Amino acid sequence: MVSIPAEQPSLDVSPIPGAADEAFWHGDRLFRLIVTGCALLVLLVLGGLVIAMGVGGLKAFAAFGPQFVVSNVWNPVSNEYGALAPLFGTVVSTLIAVAIALPLAFGAAFWLTAIAPPAVAEFVGSAVQLLAAVPSIIFGMWGLAVVVPFVAHHVQPFARHVFGHTPGLRWVVHGAAFGSGLLTGGVVLAIMVMPFMTAVMRDVFMAIPPMLKESAYGLGATRWEVMRRIVAPWSRTGMIGGVVLGMGRALGETMAVTFVIGNSNSVGWSIFAPRNTVASLIALEFPESPAGSLKLSALMALGFILIVISFASLIAARWLLREKSA
Amino acid sequence: MSGTVTKSNGWAKSPVAARRRAIDLVATGLSFVATAIAILMLASILWTLVSNGIAGLSVVALIRPMGPPGSHGGLANAIVGSVIQTVVALLMGAPIGLCCGIYLSEYGGKGRFASTVRFVSDVLLSAPSILIGLFVYLVLVAPFGHFSGFAGSVALAILAVPIIVRTTEDMLRLVPTAMREAGMALGAKKWRVVVFLCLRSARVGVLTGILLAVARVSGETAPLLFTSLGNENWSFSLAQPMASLPLAIYQYAGKPYDDWLALSWTGALLVTVGVLTINIVVRFGIRSRKG
Image (tube, rainbow over all chains, first blue to last red):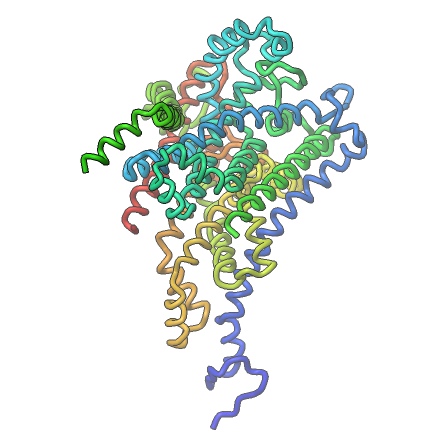
């Protein structure tokens, strides 16, 4: 009869000395330790990211105080930096992107779930998702080669022709026809985030109990009426969640925007004027920011603000998407 | 019988029904247009890439390193650099992502820690990639005083991990509990059950996630700007600045030299074809075989 010492964790007794240790090192506890460690690592990376940005931006926050977020100045010569212009460009280009992408995504999700034959929907839906896989720098080059000339030669002249003398709207379409500016950035962003929104909307439209839709069809409702009266109200929060998710992507997009937004540190009414965004400013100004400089710190401070905004939008999206499923 | 037909015909001709049908037709048409716009944009992007990039696609571009304008440079060092950094990123990111996914599915459950990790992983998934580059710069470039391919790989790994976490967890959750119980009942330890039963039966899905992560990171530019910096010459050392295809595209695009411009389009074509091929293989190849 082999006696089992109390501290031995396993019944797997072997005559080899040190077997208990071996069982530990090859066993469950080690495995659990490893996978938990990896989960912890993911937490640490995001924590490190936020802390690094916050600490890096401390110098700028200390130097400019709350003035930092309302100041429009970005002047490396006098060493004065403000976040207003990039924040303005980020928010407005994202809003334009959402305004364009939302109807497109809604329409595509409606067509894919309610109208297209399943085989076609499968194929076309995959093609739409391929659009989401295109790298962002490719969107930038395509935007520069295709969208910028189109806006310069067609959209802006047309907009000025139509709204050029309308009080109020006059300043919105004001400016030279460069082609690169807020609207172009918004359009390219819209095409980038639209597949994400479509995917989420498709999922929430599919999640509706078929009985609800079938009863409406049975009462003689048309497909649009089913969408409008049954599916849309049922999945409203889910749809908003998808929109916010796409918005979060648009906020932090760098390469595509850098190519087409014109990169001018300014604030104004015109949607055709060149502006910049937080991400494009960081990408362009970083190479000229020596380590330890106030400028680098200002960029980090911008990064901190950006991550806080995308954090907040993601929390909002999750909250909205969860409420429905619960 | 004939009564019903007449009735429904009469109903269909009423102005209300006509209006409802018209609205339905318009909505249906618009939704088709929305879908068509998305497809047209994809087609336009592909067409722009092919028509601009195919001319520069030559053996020279594939075997010669980058060079100054007019020197018949190619993209070979950038292609090799991209492959090296993606592979290294995967070697770091895949095990971490897998383990984290395993934790969430097999150990964490609905606990507070697991929910936090799940949420944080989602945040990382949509965190602005340029900030990840900035973070890695602060941690791995600034302290050492020089840019390096390793820092670039770490930045890419941080991007890859959340994708792999998400798919691994989802795929492991699809494994029936009965299979786990069968393994346990045979006396297997939990880690053996997880690795040799669950992970093995979910391997196609898990592989899908890893491939999608490869596709995502191999086209990323922003996180490499401040980490691996790019390199004009051959660079095989992870301790040195390393070239990569997206950085070469970024460097060459919009420059006033025709041969650089042509190369940037060729590079863009190569990256896109690579990324979309992986996606198509995943979507149509692996998924259809499984289903």
